[in-house]
Image 1 (cartoon, rainbow, N blue to C red):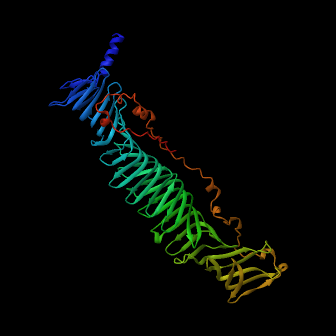
Image 2 (image 1 turned 180 degrees about the vertical axis):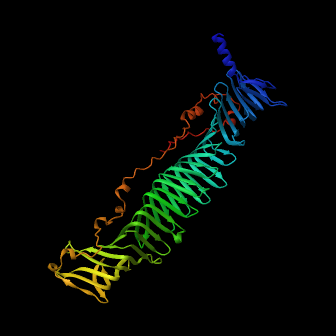
Image 3 (image 1 turned 90 degrees about the vertical axis):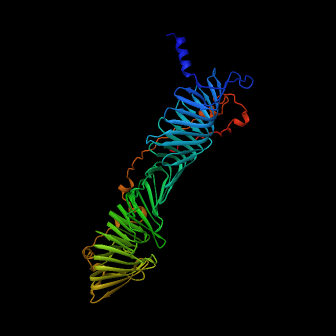
Length: 560
């Protein structure tokens, strides 16, 4: 076969073929070189490389292989694509169709249903199997109604790309986005730029994310926020599933309790709606407001459970807390909103001002109405000790079976030690000269505090002791049995509740969502360029039949 024969066959295969044409006329003045067909009992019909087109009137430029169809147009490609419109300009060389006036494009989906696109003007690129609009369009499938100013449909992969004022309307939720990719088979949506999903019991905001529109499940990986069951969940990556009533977040997380005005921060958290609970780990801390003062509670693991009025906070392993003038640490902390009780369990230590208190367990009780600190209990082996503020070498100490304290305006004022109590206390005159060291045993002791320091000691029932001059009391006798000074462990600031391991956590690398395919500026330039083949077809009454000129496409950069 010669090269000339090959070129001839290729040209003929690209030629638009007339299947049925009636009432043939010509008008060399208005349409030089064109054949004009109009329907009779049958519509005019053309065929081109697997697509058929029916219309009432056709202006066919056979030599240029271009066609303008007018009136009741139907274009069908195989069994899967069907398009109707008022007018179509079609170029057989580029296989590009420009349809306008009430354009409707129907495409079959894998589930056996149809997807329908309606718009005023649509370009159908048969060569690349893409259709795109820039003058607002509506897409309806079995699950959703989607609208946007700009859109492109990739037929081979059944994907829409929407830009500018994207809106999804579903009976269960609505979704608004700046840019969104939507797969018609899976009904999955990928969001780029500011996006909001509003359901019956939740609201999601993100600037890059994924959402399964069938089951209302998805995740966001940039500036994500979920408003969910009186909580706001924020993090680098946030996952949500409506069916299981579950949400989780990874890296730089904040969970805000909007009713109790408490905040949980961590690098991993889970929220269970049915159980009204939050699980948090990796530098986890919960922050609550106690009489205009923030209470910070930390543990290797945090659990926040229960309805707002009965919320319980549990910190497990290496638990610590901090608030102004008070801090503590232990193995685990249990805090109950309803009773105002905070329990420090296993090897607890509490610092109030300069006073260190230890015992088998420690309870701090707040007034649930005023939210002020009310009382303190140190149960079994209660011990209170402070470094002598003048000598800086001795320690004031008191011990007993149990300790009971009373707060006034959030300041510890009274301490009662009961059963088998002992005291060692450094006594000074007004000139801060040491008078002696009081070492006494009795049934119970009351300590009156002022500005978190000892103001007065009252011994009750059969005190037995003496005030020893400094030189007469040996160093080994200046510490009560069970004395342990833990001053180097004291938590001085809210940042001290975290250990070195907490501050060196290696964060999980968040897997991103690939950048969307841009709607090319070249396509827009071609659509507005006079040399565009479908724009270069002569048409009758140009002013009334040309669609309005489309606005310039705004390039949307994919968010990182």
